[in-house]
Image (tube, rainbow, N blue to C red; front, side, top):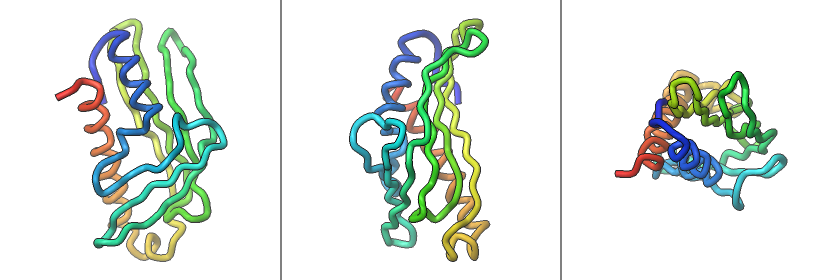
Length: 146
């Protein structure tokens, strides 16, 4: 998702990534201690059918690098045993020096781990897509304000 242009937008977006606030959606909440660092555990609380479930993950890497004159910033986590899915998710902010555009990307791959996630796979995929779309919209709102 395009967030805007310039260094200020990039810096605000990296702060939101560090805060992980883009994932606090009302029906999804993230519990963590400070900026996610490699090896840290995070827990996503997800409200499904009126019940809160806990999905745990570990930060597998962080990055702040430049590739082809494009600064990139973010981190990825891998799911742990007590997560409904088995996979990884990466959160990345990029700033194109050529166009001055700042963008946010969520890249995920997974397969169902929990029995209910396997049985309800189409529904679980829709839920994942909804979560990703809402997280992108929240990131944009947090970076650009009301």
